[in-house]
Image 1: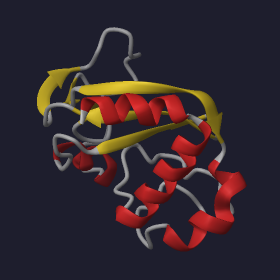
Image 2: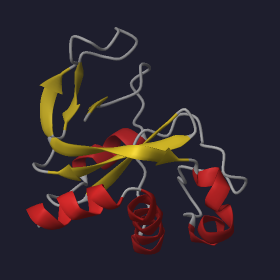
Image 3: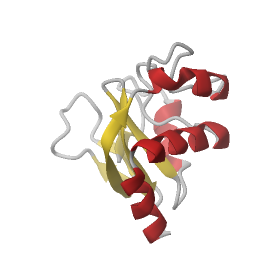
Image 4: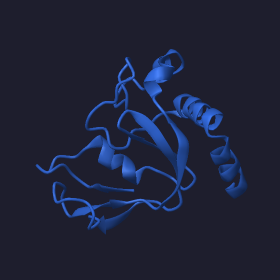
Length: 139
């Protein structure tokens, strides 16, 4: 997982700063196109790294890299369909989602908190039991 260290204008960004706060063993959910599509487990803390070649140059060359083991879901899911369970667990500040279940643009890496993380794990494993088995095997 890679991010720039700062915004293009040099300002700090909470979501880029979060790259330096992850710990080995932390779970990271991959959310894109309104779906949670994978879960990653942090295998090493953040180090300074140049932007990967496959990224376009919209971002600064200087960034953070966090090594991950990714597990792609056979059955991605829309958090929007589970807001009856998730909405009251969203962080008050720097939330990755709005109360209606839409993602917040510009959120790169958000801290979810234990309760929201556990709820997302439960949904993930209910739909993708093979991932639960894989994760259990490595822990």
